[in-house]
Amino acid sequence: MKVTEDVLAKLRGILADPDRLLTSDADLYSYSFDASFGLHKPEAVCQPVSTEETAGIVRIADEYEIPLCPRGRGTSLSGGPLPVQGGIVIDFSLWNSKLVIEEEDLIAIVSPGVITADINNAANEFGLMYPPDPSSAHVSTIGGNLAENAGGPRGLKYGVTKDYVLGLEIVTADGKVVRTGGKTVKNVTGYDLTKLIVGSEGTLAIITEATLRLIPKPQASLTCMVLFDEIVDAGRAISKVLGSGIMPSKMEIMDQSSIIAVEEYASLGLPVDVEAILLIELDGHPLAIEEEMQRVAEACKEVGARSVQVAKDKKEEAELWQARKLVSPAIVKIKPTKISEDATIPRSQIPEMFRRLKAIKEKYKIHLVVFGHAGDGNLHPNIITDQRDPEEMRRVELAVEDIFKAAIELGGTLSGEHGIGTMKSPFMEMELGKDGLALMKSIKTAWDPKNILNPGKIFPEEGERFELRNG
Ligand SMILES: Cc1cc2nc3c(=O)[nH]c(=O)nc-3n(C[C@H](O)[C@H](O)[C@H](O)COP(=O)(O)OP(=O)(O)OC[C@H]3O[C@@H](n4cnc5c(N)ncnc54)[C@H](O)[C@@H]3O)c2cc1C
Image 1 (tube, rainbow, N blue to C red):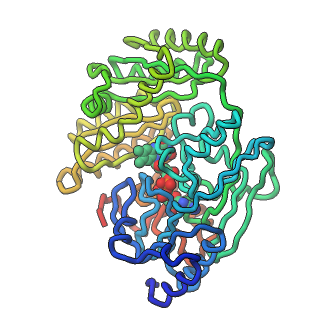
Image 2: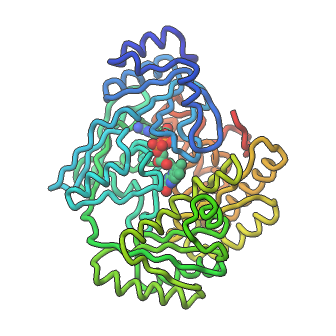
Image 3: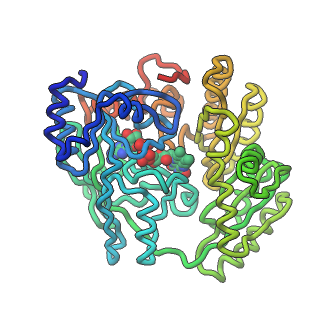
């Protein structure tokens, strides 16, 4: 169904402030994209700031069978918040009013529009930490992180968003408000609906509140930058360090193309003649990590590292991490269109994945940049291209297909953290098989029989093939 005047009037009646219903063309256009590729304009945008308003919007959508697309800050790299079938976007970015730290229980209770970094900053004031740290943490919302099960550099040691969710308040597809889980670390009462909703990309329920687990903040950290003449050696260094009994808090990789892009963008003094840089962070007791850092350096040198530079102070440490943070903004200076993948493989296959990515880059003559959370096998092969060039886009499509095939063949997965959205749905059967996909679909049908919650995401349409279409 379309969003009619009748529907708009009802939505206006739900929102306490009618200005939080957006219908002008300019407003709708600004909700038609995310950080991925497509362009899809909604028919209306609602900006709820309470559970009652959210449930009211869902009930109207249920009655009129109108697609609903929840949205945080639109930083998704897989098309997640795009209204591919039209309908209403529910923008949660204004709803950041609740951020409560309950120190004794080591938990945070948050509304869906709270910025992720603000949770960690608030926890830090109590000597606590919220570990999940997507590189977009300063701009993305906890609602978006929960829906995508976001990871980040610290995922290597601390896990991802789902490992820190104790309970949720959700609105179901027919507008009911339900609580899952609770405040306790242990909870085995029935099915774990909390974990099912986390990572469901807004297709099963809408998240209106989350109870998150916090941990004590580590006392200290140390960072080093390791240079490699051969990228394959950087891959071997990861297994070597982990195999030596050390669990770094972060282990990030930048390939030569990312290093050159960052250097041209920000002149940080990075060595542009190396094939790869590993940035490794250790956290814990100051004396322990100093000793561990020596062992990390030895392990890296054993597999051919050119040099290991340990940051002398917090300023130098921040400068090293700045290099990694600048990769995304730097590479879009090369060409206007960025196709960002996050095919993930078992750690042991990292050297082989690098070999295959090199071969794909040469075969299709594309600009392929690789960086990412190498310590957990979560690489980010990014293709930098120009969507106005149809011949190049065709080569890019074939390269993306080959990247996914390589990841699956090596025992990996289509996505480690960015989600499926619209960008990877045609490949779902390749990873899950027909029966696995059907089982997942049966959950969607049971929870959302009218298919109004974020339709067109995760599941491929009948006979759909992969195509990088814009619109
Ligand atoms: C420069 C850059 C770096 C990034 N780095 C990382 C990284 O290190 N790790 C990582 O995992 N991701 C990363 N991302 C991807 C992105 O930031 C994450 O997927 C993030 O979780 C999206 O949050 P958001 O608030 O922008 O949500 P959106 O992009 O607006 O939405 C994402 C998904 O969540 C759903 N959603 C949003 N709010 C709700 C809600 N309240 N209830 C139900 N569903 C909801 C949407 O429908 C959509 O499917 C990066 C992106 C960029 C641009």
